[in-house]
Length: 402
Image 1 (tube, helix red, strand yellow):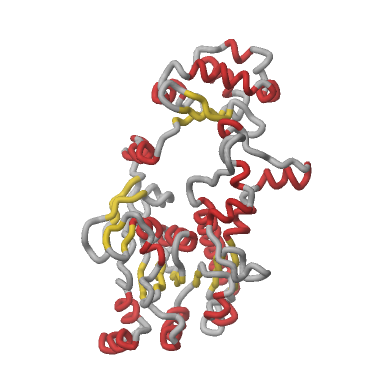
Image 2 (cartoon, one colour; image 1 turned 180 degrees about the horizontal axis):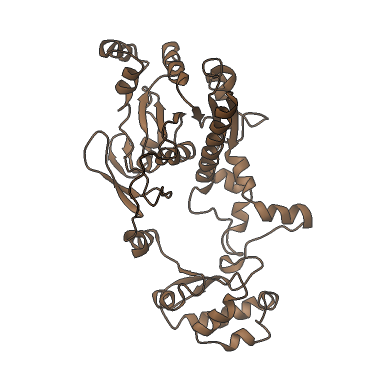
């Protein structure tokens, strides 16, 4: 591992985040991992980010495990944006910010004055990124919306699960996280453009558009060939096999021979070299035609050993993975022995939070590991930076807008 870099890629970038719950916080968390100063704006009157209240597990009041999972490497400032003096303070922050991100209902950024039309007069370079459920235009702009709804309407449930089972959602809130990532990508791109041209902009992403865009080749198949993809047995790839789940002695193994070169290697290493030359299974097309028969043969062979034994035999030779539960996944030596877990120190002190490390490494080094702050922890420091003394800050607090 190389020495810790002096600068992270987004050092010097300031993002004001009017955010809550999952999608927006996930995106800005990744920006914080890369060095951006993410100032999380939380309403002082309603308990802050709703994610603080999402159970079932809590470290303390207003500090849920859920909240910590989406808000590392940020600062928290309590500010009532509906109060005139609160918005005045917000405008002072905007003057020195690179971007403002909100993940509000689509009709709210205009009402609250979070668009470039409202904030560009204060800072012409500011980038305003809006993450909503269905966008800021059209008949659904005022609709609330959540991940699972997007999975349902964008077709995900129709292609997930077994063919004879009910429609099934993905086990994770994947649309939230993908949309957060999309917003972070848009925001950084906007900052690059604003620094080049001197002019900021509005950028819009939505849960619905991101969910729909993720259909990629399935959408192209339908739009050009009229093919409506349905659920396949054993989580199979729709056109390649073996690329699916198989039973082992103690569980399941996912095998992905997605290139022809892997098939004879796989057949050899499981002790069935005859399958590679059998005309029923010699090519992708032949195997797909005989998939049910091949599944039965491979189940019988793979059931003779455990998933761990097959992983030792096949790993690195053929693309395979054992099917693990969440606990097993986190106790996997490939996770525990390679820095993929970390202890995040609390800025306010106290016991650290044990969580997943950030996924991006800079010069071989992991991302910073600062736990999510207590609600309003950075309020006084940030207002002092604007030039306010403690007496004035105390008066603001008495008025109730911080």
